[in-house]
Image 1 (cartoon, rainbow, N blue to C red):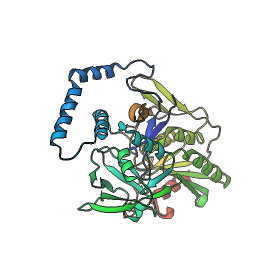
Image 2: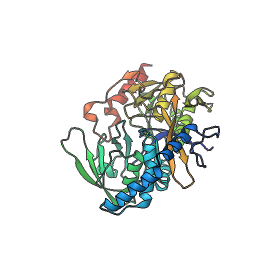
Image 3: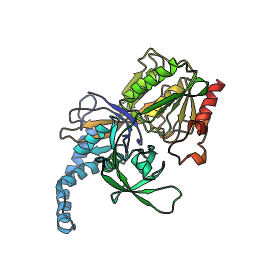
Image 4: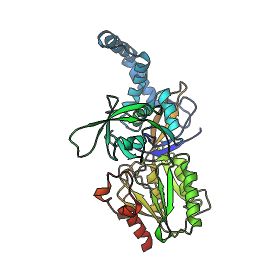
Length: 409
């Protein structure tokens, strides 16, 4: 099995542009339904099929479709109705992170982790109530130009409500060819009414890592998500800052909804000594999968990691491992608290499911799901900075608190 693990939000937050991400785990080229990891049949799945047969589910579906065909005012799209049945079965689990993808949605999902997007230019996430949130509209991007702010809730897409809509589906509806437009209804905290905006889509390619050397030889690296390209960008940033004589390092994971497990483990391997545990997962069968540092290099300066309530999944793996080993102090506010893992299960017709399959644990055995990581130094972002898309580093009180923490060491 060729495994791809995604640590993400709310979703993550796939992180697209719209960006979206999640912590997910694995791909299987075969139809994976009703199969345990050891290849045996799944008794629970067989019981479900038996129960459905006993209820004559095919007859009921026929009855529903007959009634709809007779009474429903518009024509019925048979293909869409069939896909809706599959999606409804998965949705019945009540897990916002377990999702069915049509073949078209699955193609878009795979494209979203490449770091190149055509959309409105914002990271998005989905909270525990199912609200789709604009996390970080990119400066001078389409969403930013349309007046969309961090924390705005996406209420409708082209007149269609986002209530009950999966994050991936919402992203696919907002994405489109550059030059085309999409009408969005948003709600901004503090406003008394919704706001409609028309956003012109654009092709956006955004670096996931930005870095610079601050005063007092403090290195600063901001990571927006954990994409395929992020590990290389992060390691190059660390290497360059070390050449410049870095004496301390701030890693900024605020508003980072997550991404690929392989990426975050590769990044941690540049810091954590070789052979040390980075993260491990346990599934419903008690099977454990461990990921250890595989790089001989370390970072031998004090480290501070910035987190906030939108730092999720892969961000929490990164921050949690460094906190457990005492290699970094966490600064900011508590993280999102997503400690479950999803796997991608492709099927032969091109569709797929993203299924929650396990919980992940920090090196010390802590599962932060629903609990979150707590900062060593708690600092709220100044109120007058919260709606700014770009905050100068010298004005960012959380970054300055991280720098002060390093200088104190």
